[in-house]
Image (tube, rainbow, N blue to C red; front, top):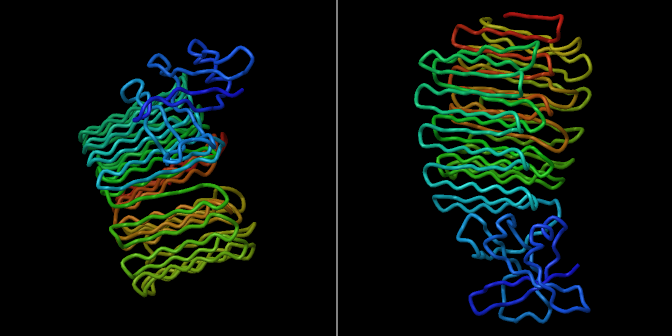
Length: 460
């Protein structure tokens, strides 16, 4: 049904045709005024009372004034009622669009669809408000203290406040609670489900909050500077802001790409399709080229010292040489294994299932290589600069390099995620399945508690 929308433009009042969906028609039913008795055209008077209407898409008529340059008017309920802001044309289908402007304060407004909207503004303090769906929203404000309030569903909420003491109380559902208190010693007790728990203690510096369900989200705060907001659905996007300098634009569809610029020095271009590739150059020193197809390979050179070549096919292997000391060769096939030797000092080998194992060797630099599936692997090499290349599946990958602060957030599946925070203290928290988790805490105190299933416990 065709409707006419009454718009208060700068020069007089104009009427435009607009097609409204059923939900919008119901909300505006009291304001529908028939134009004539013999036609289906109506006049829609958008008044302040129609606060439920977030946006109306108005195509121009062919006989519209030639001087008009705008083809979309968006009604903003958050501003003065009844006011309109013009925006460029946005498709109304499921294909999301990103508009990122950086002028010292940077504003990202994403309209995923009629019911989801993201608004991220950075003004030194940075605020992220994400509505993942009707029932969940994330509000992250950073003022040196950082606060995260996440409503994942009707029964769960997360509140993280940090002032050197920081308290996290998470209600995953009626039967699960998380309480994390940091007071110089910091203690994390997480009950992932009835059979598994994770205890992570960090000297009051790092915190990981992961909500592992269908609407899961990860918030990583690093020294009050970095923030990661990930909206994990079909139209998901990632926005990473680094000291007001870095920007991430990710279009997670067949032709999606990632562009990360770091202080005008680093650049990431990722084409996330069958022939996707990643090229990362850091200060003229490191370069990553990844072709994420059946014959994909990874080449990482670090100051002429480290090199990684990974062939991610049935016969794939990883070779990492670090100053002539460490070498990793991984064959990522059905019987894949990981062997990491680090000056013969510390070694952790975890067998996640019959055919896969994880070996983590540490010297304060810590390296984690995880064989997620036949075609994916994680390699983290660190010399204070640390880089992570993760090939999650044929169409998606994340590469985050953090000058000594690196953080990794991976969404492995609906119930699993990995968070690695590093400053010589690195931590790995993995939720492998409903009943298993891995926590590695390091500074000479490391402990690994893995519950692979109801009948298997490991303590390292």
